[in-house]
Image (cartoon, rainbow, N blue to C red; front, side):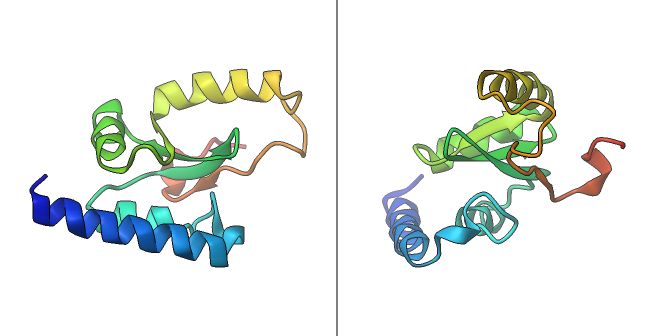
Length: 117
């Protein structure tokens, strides 16, 4: 990332922090400000949720998740689909939310990857 790109990215990140302070209800939802930035950067997450108070982004594969993480860390958690399911199940069990209505909502941005009911 060049200095100019970094400065632009940093400005967007500062805007993100300001917007989150003004509108925290969009955190971890399809209206997420960070999700908008991720998409603008050319990434295509297939789902968004929250885990341990962190916006959590799910991608088809680990490579795209890793590339997005490099750009946006320290914000968010970044998963390929396989790793997400493993950690998601562990997280819900540890939080006592497995198979309950208290579990955070996973918003499937690409319904082709949503679990079949």
